Length: 292
Image 1 (spheres, rainbow, N blue to C red):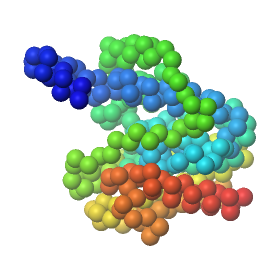
Image 2: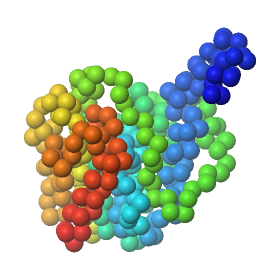
Image 3: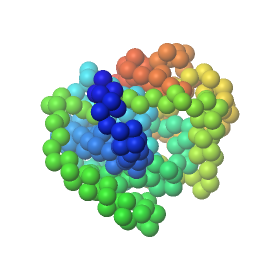
């Protein structure tokens, strides 16, 4: 309604410029919605450091896939597009502060083996991630210094974020990707799956760190819609890297083509909606409880 009123009052040229400016801010990941999301995750995380027993890590598949409403000891620190390097460094930075943590859930998707956020178009997300979580860039000299400074300036404008007392990281404001063909999305993800050199050295380091801390690592392979699964090689190829880490302290939970899930449990080809997240969270927590 407000947009329609603005269009009637203001000249079209001005409206177009405003839209272009807002879209540019979104593309550079310096818009208030994204920056507030990251800051909110950080505030909630630090509030729960001493009480959490289970921590969920990695990208949007974790972010969308793990509900926290019915488990007070669980925190969802899934951060959109983050890679293995970032999550290893994040875990290392906070590992000794999570005094009651016993289980780490790590989401391993089709693209996880080769994904390095600093090398893809979404790399400017890293400015906010570094600002709020203190994780150094995997490579220096890649980001434009002027753009980085602009994003940091936008971060500093966000003085206060209201975080609910019961907030434990799950966000229900999802952005599902429905505007590209499944074949194209599968092709992009496969490119990262087979990229060399891969990023699995950081998963090896995460396994070592979690094991050192006498905790258990649960590698979760999330479900996907049938059309997506059928557009890719067999999962034995896609997830070989994950299965190579299976051990007494590393448990693989493979839901990729699980009959537990239907296409209606996903909001797009590979992201769970809230109904699907309820199913996944319940099953993951059940298996963790049985493994204790």
